[in-house]
Length: 371
Figure 1: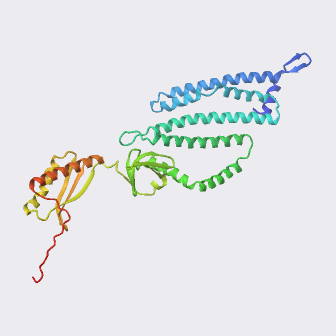
Figure 2 (figure 1 turned 120 degrees about the vertical axis):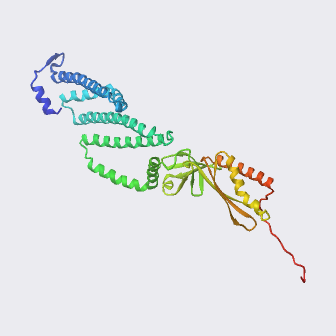
Figure 3 (figure 1 turned 45 degrees about the vertical axis):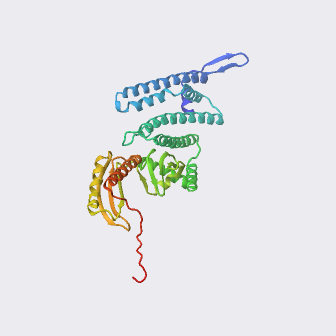
């Protein structure tokens, strides 16, 4: 409501004056109408609020979006009554000719309040949406990703920064402040900050890449170059591993997205290849019987599946066999159990068959002088 419309309105209504001691005749027309506008606007704002809430509740019949509509209703219901009072005061003071400083102050308070309230409502909806799509996101195993809470908070924080930036521009623009140069300055400053924080920003965007691409998750056993360990936390800038020795290893997220990472958690079964040797003095029929012995041992082992066993070569001091088998579990302890049981059984069979494992030996032939 501007001054032209206000003067036009007051010209259509009769003057209202009262007599006061020492003051004489006092014109209170503007005061009366300001009070009426204040009361009416306050009531109208509450009516509009109730109508909007009623309409939103009628949309909750759509079961697909009922959660988000309920969040929006709760946000609108959470608007403080002093916000309605402030808007009503702003409308009522339009009947008075106030100093420019007072007008600027009242307008500034109003715009800040409206921007704050709008950001609060939008932030509530964003947090709900982000929580549903990120914070409670499950992996292919049906487990909630432990890193989802961190990523959800990060996305919410970035969204709030953007909202407050737009809110600040809105307030300054409506107060008559030129924001074009301000935006240009912020852009130049943003570029300078981006150069200064290039490493941090690289890790930040790398954390997004790790979250959405999911090469590994918290709890996975990974190998990164010469280091290995269990992923304990995936942060905004770095990822922390607990190595086999027990210490904590901190690796930057940018490094993780630019190097090869072996993830043993995604391994469905483990392929194992190893060799053993027997002595050259072993009779030929027993040398030929060894593959069958190995096959019979694996037939009794739970969790292990033999792929092949062959007499592969003549070593320097042993007859070499190669065995390839699969452990039907990615668990390292299960692999070690099966390997141990196989070693025990093979030793027992060789002991019964009188077959000796080979070990480094040398045979020295001596000649007598003159022979």
